Image (cartoon, rainbow, N blue to C red):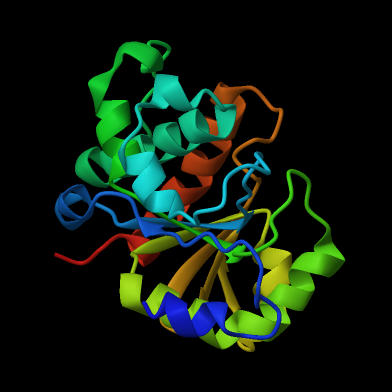
Amino acid sequence: MDFVSWKEREIHRDKFFITDGIINRSLWDKAPVKVLFLMKEAYESSSNVIEEWALNDYLAGKKLNELGKTMWWSMAQWVDGINKLVETGEVNSFDKDYKSNPKMEEAFHSCAIINIKKSSGNSSSSSDDLSTYVDSDWDLLMEQIQSINPDLIICGATYPLIESKLVKSNPSAEWLYYAKGYFFVDFWHPSNQWPYKVKYYSLLSALNQSKELWMPKT
């Protein structure tokens, strides 16, 4: 993806820019389901950091217990559950011992994460602000999605922001929309304060009902 040209757009010019994408290419290539998370924005919390960085490279070098935030654990649980759903044909029980399960690390590092807003990120997001970035960058965001070419796109509270850009987004099943050759899941942000188990079963139960639609064809 040509992030150099992206950074040169007026809305990003002279602003701190954080790139993103596939976390671990090798694990991505081997994943039963290639899952892309479409998120809101990343941010640099320290004003002393000058050198820009890539979110996916940062995550690739970290273990989940080092990252700390609940959202990363949620993502790992969801990807692991989606992979098992494809492999077994059913929703597997929530893993209460997820923090000691090495499969969680592998599942997390096998996904891709991209943000709508790649510069001047904040810890809290404004829908109006994010919509401005969607309007500015939708062509490049769609190009990035196409270059990653996922089987399933989980929108972390971002689907309402992009829905108008998809033009014909046909509701295929519960929370599932098909548009531009991809399946989009309109779901909660991974940091949603519902318990891990509630988020896991809510997503996996919905995807189980529609698995014949979105499951990769072998």
